[in-house]
Amino acid sequence: MTDLKFDRESTLALLSFNESLPSLPDFFLKIQEIAQDPDSSADDLAAVVRGDHATTAMLLKFANSLVYNPLQTPIGELSKAIARLGMKETIHIATAISLLSGISIPAGLAHVRNFWSHAFAMGMICEKMAKGADPQQKLCSHERAFMTGLLHDIGRAALSMRIDLAYFDRLDSQKNKQDLLEFEQDLYGVNHAEAGRIMLALWLFPADICAAVGEHHSVHSPSYLGRLCYQANSYCEEYLPDELSFDLVTEKVMETIKEHPFDLSMVTAGDK
Image (cartoon, rainbow, N blue to C red; front, side, top):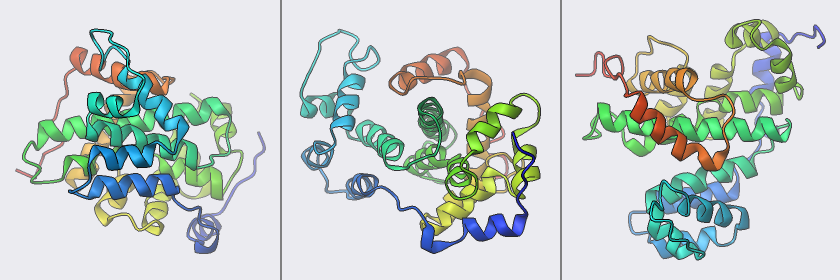
């Protein structure tokens, strides 16, 4: 690939330029409205999801998988899929799919699928680590942990959409040659963690999620959510495959956790 380089000031200016900021998908926003409304019902969720055929099909696929259907009793109705998966899990899956289909990452289909499969796995692992480290949700809600994990690498999407359309191709060319953060810092003047923090702040996400995303490669993050995200990311990198089909994420994550239980000692350091 070319030796083209970007200076930090130009990269930050492009990342922070509001007028060209890509919008969060409408479907994502509708799902979040349901998630944040304590009075919402499964019928409300079904009414939103039913209008998106890809999400409906994927929810049925999850509901008929061995993880949620050990007796192998097939179903074909969305309402039954939501009942089997549960509201929370349905919202998690729909949220991930809404970003997968609604954010146009300039990369090949394989890159896009792997990107969001990893993001979904991270969301699951962050949430499960949070349940183990902080079952009473005194430090952070488990839903917030899931969202942080899901969005932890959004800076990579930001770099590809706003700075360099060839971002993912460049990563392929340097794979195993240089640390990812060093490669990004050398080429763009920022890394994807910083880019993600900027992007989420522009999208008006809560400050603690923005900070945690910005620190998810920092072993010494001062925040609980940042340490949680770092530990979950390290766990994914060590135990999960680089390429994973989206519909198999839940099954693979559950198998991996059974084989490799979490070490949560660093997550709550300084918070107890």
